Length: 116
Length: 115
Image (tube, rainbow over all chains, first blue to last red; front, side, top):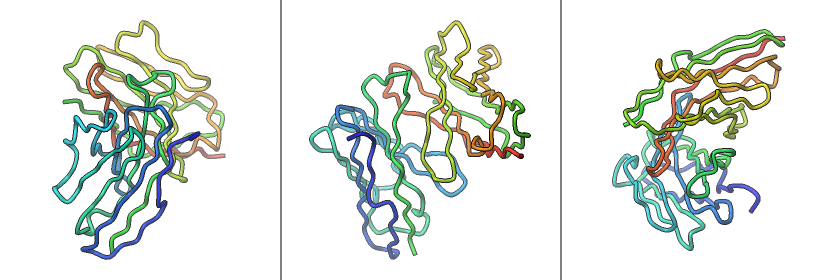
């Protein structure tokens, strides 16, 4: 597609439920990144995919968080047993590998997750 | 590990004036890149400008320029002739070259342009 697409754009869930967040990167972008942005804060790195592999999962905050990528395309971030502190905007970015310095990384519009 | 520091939580500037947003970085890697992103209230992340550690000249993109001082480990963003539409959060980010290319972000600076 023309840009990075994330769905849903907004998600309200009850504490303890599982949620799945989806990211469709730009076609041909082999690198994919997930970030979390809490209200009024900067972006925290969660996980990086190169192709379908995740060589860096160092930012996943707990074992309730997992992610996968298939077909070197769509990625899904799953949060199990959601907690209120999981409320944030989850942003996905993609890039060629190595990234093109002229355009940086392309970010999606994010999924705003609210745990009530 | 790389650390990005933005010490200005908020900045104000008059329309048509220039403003400098501060960013310092801390890395032991000799090869790295520094980015600035703009995030309007709509939430999208807009790439503004990039500076590589081996670049000989400061980067410039339209009204944006990067005041890169390697010895001070600073990469300040200069916005000239501010416009009302420049009001947004601005994030400095860094990455180590040759690694997995992940970006490390600062906490951001909220810029408000006054008419």
